[in-house]
Amino acid sequence: MCWTRSRWSNGALDVATLGQAVAALQPEGAIVVDEAATSGAAWFALAAGAPRHTVLGLTGGAIGQGLPTAVGAAIACPDRKVVALQADGSGMYTLQALWTMARESLDVVVVVCANRAYRILQIEVARAGIAEPGPAARALTDLSHPPLDWCALARGMGVPAVRADDAASFAKAFGDALAEPGPALIEALL
Image (cartoon, rainbow, N blue to C red; front, top):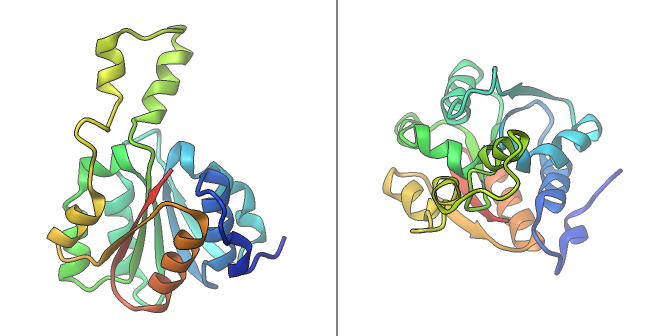
């Protein structure tokens, strides 16, 4: 399916519209590092129709490998744009990779899928048969107290950052980030 930027006007930003925008706008030859886990599924389903690209995904369920993998891909292939689809919880494990992106002027667009939860761990709790986790389990998988400010974190490490809370602002921010060389971060509030 072919999408244009106008496709996202006034729509909600959710995993489906985020996936549609990334698949439609990612450039030919992009390297997409997917550690968005639960939030990246819609993109993955649409990726077959996206311009030709390389996907580097999770290895054995490792949490925190996305940002360092994006750094490695950008160093290995400086002529290709790297798009890092990153979950907010797992991104906290290796946040310092943003500083490396800035220091080395790496051409990486980081999309932080900010659902304010360790969603994959919530799914694992449910798979373990725990229908109603107790307060301690809920607190361990919640990233909203205090909420992470990915834009402030990125800027503090030298990476330009913007926040998007609807489909149109995300598509614009993603297109703008792709058009500029060097690192950028978009905090996509889902």
